[in-house]
Image (cartoon, rainbow, N blue to C red; front, side, top):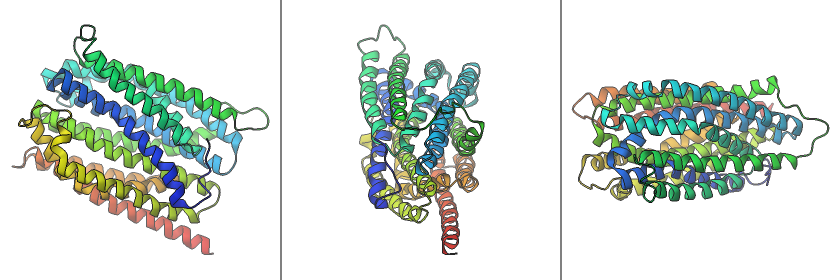
Length: 451
């Protein structure tokens, strides 16, 4: 059901809107967590390392899918808030067409240069074949990833965060079952193990994508407009691109930075790679949750600005910060004190290098979740308000610091631990910048409103 985010108490509106988004991202992360769990538990530690190694490259493709999601979502939110329903439908059709063309181009690039990227990040020879196999199957299903992301962006723009949640819940639970089925009962069919994990994800994502698109078109039919709607608009594409391209660049550079970091990690051997793969899945669960709530903040901001309800934006910001800090505190406690048990989900050997690496990473980064969560809420407002330069500057500062410091600190006596220490430093610096940009924006809006 469509939901107007411009009315009602901001804290209650955001809570009702963002909590299903939070649930959705939990189930979305179960895709990759399930792949790593099954690879580590039912195949081998090297299979876990291969899945984790390929995952860093798949995040580049996800960056483009996320950019299409947020670009479409922010623009559609603005039209929905302003009650411009003809433009809203044109924006949806334009986003679907443009995203499809972009996705096909990326699939071609992935097929041509996948092996080169894996060599570029110093993929060890003992996991190269499995890493390439997993990556190839992922690329085949990239169209599902793109269109599912655009569909969820449309639902979010219409204030409906529950429908994507239901799709993802069913799909993710099915993915866990299919992963285990393909690597156990169908072991003779998928002899490498890693291919079974990848094909299970491919099938489940495909079903989710098709169902989501069907429901999007059904939802659009309930929004009545006069006359015939344009299928494509260059002007609206420009508006989507204005939001999407910086978001794509931001996510892409983050992914490239992570690939560089993965290359540094790979020099420490498959044990450290496996430990990083396990802990980074747990970390990404948290960060993606914050990012998703930040995206909800963008939808909330765009709808209220579209409806000229500017005074509600700061109230929403405060409510959003309160929400993510509370969620972050729960994850921080769980990861810091129960990291060994959580890493054991992926790794059997309690005393090995992989386990020690995973625990160390979680203990270093988890106390700083409240910091990065605040940054991502501020970023959500800036993105929803179209302040893309400020948003990108803070993000790139975080990335550059983490990459440079990971290289420097890992070369000292700290070894691989130096890589993990770069995370909190980058987060702290970027959070200060994002908050400064947000409060400057808020003061300017407040000054304009008082005139």
